Length: 587
Ligand code: PEP
Ligand code: MG
Image 1 (tube, rainbow, N blue to C red):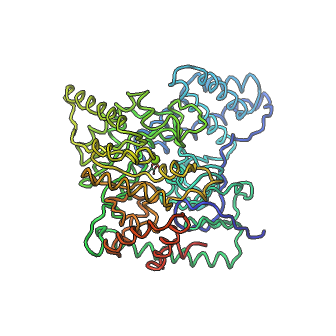
Image 2: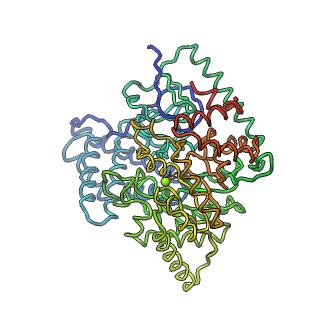
Image 3: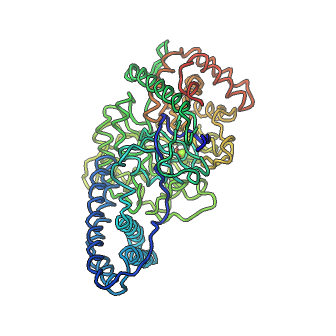
């Protein structure tokens, strides 16, 4: 077969050379066939075996998830296991096989769907969650009956590259499996949450490949270059050879970073930047320390909702937050309150489909309608904060009124805990994410109400330039290095510093090596990046003086197009750091 190159969006760095493992989000395919009377009991036996196999898979998954991502997610699999003991569900399947004389796949599928439909039609949310469970479990049993094994758990037999239509946040399970060399997906953008997740989990990935799943079959050879966004199908020997060299060079580069990862992020003239990491799952805290992060600048807490069906209760949240805080103490952890909505549409909250979800019922807006969701989260955070320095950050703030309302709610929760004499730490800093143009314009008044700012450039870019961050058709227009953006950043920093508070940046722009000198020169106090980017950004910070960075940033305002500004930054960084993988790995 001829070699074919596709270009997508680089989502997580690294190079993988391997075989395709195709994973599509569709229903298991099976044939319905009659079973003769004499074979009915062995058909039931086959069903019983598949139940045992399913139970083993779910237990393994539960334990693995508890260890890696926390209790809240793990509970989902306990609920699913309980379905296997539900006599009504399994009894109906056994009776169905006997009565209708059909194969187990057909009856399991039919029964699971009828349970699903009945639960889904109920008003109570708990039952609607159960609907998802029963469908999932049904699919799992059918797959086991088909001998297709478990496409959702357990190590792959061989190392492989997952090629998928879309990578959903709930697919985190797949990424935690062993033997996953890389992920390549038809859909997605570089700041989609799924891309962010692969970066956190250190799995090389390329997204936005459009029709890739229609071009490959299981076992095809594939190269994934998560640094450049290129995918090579059926590579020729020569191509494979050149990628083996590239991969080696990249690994050597990473190795060289490990020498400086534990040094301070300080310019040559002694100006200190706080370099922290963004995480999505409690289990990633270890990676932050490993790569020398000075704390967590953004904990996207909404990922505790991951893999559906559970709104984490106070105890689950408390345990997960505490685990993170304890493991990075004495460094601080900034917990962002749930930013649900947008592309994080987990089905356990009844988030309605919206034409513009990023601009819809999202983040703190959800809290104003469901204050208990925030109260529970704040209770858990305040309690966990006894384990180490903790900050709370509110996303999608548009004006000072919202911040005041949220602060009132926080005070109420504090006095509630005090009255109940529950142990907690009330001394936590409050921050506002600056990610809406209105927040930039009103930054001076918001600064009076909070202890710090954190600029979310993923949303800010999307709203300033009116470019949907997940829409791959307009990705060429998504340009954080736009003159309008640096003006926004400058306004925000000046407002914060006049009020005597610090400014962090936790959007993906903070991890772009081409932007580092500019951001230091724009006087940001803190950068928060994916754990894997820590070494590279630190290396850049440590090799420039603050004075030259400020000078560099001042000159950046002479450009009035994104092309010019991008060239200005890239040329300078290329000149200084010819060895950065974004240059040598760009093909
Ligand atoms: C951002 O918008 O830049 C940000 C950090 O938050 P998220 O990507 O989770 O929206
Ligand atoms: Mg955001």
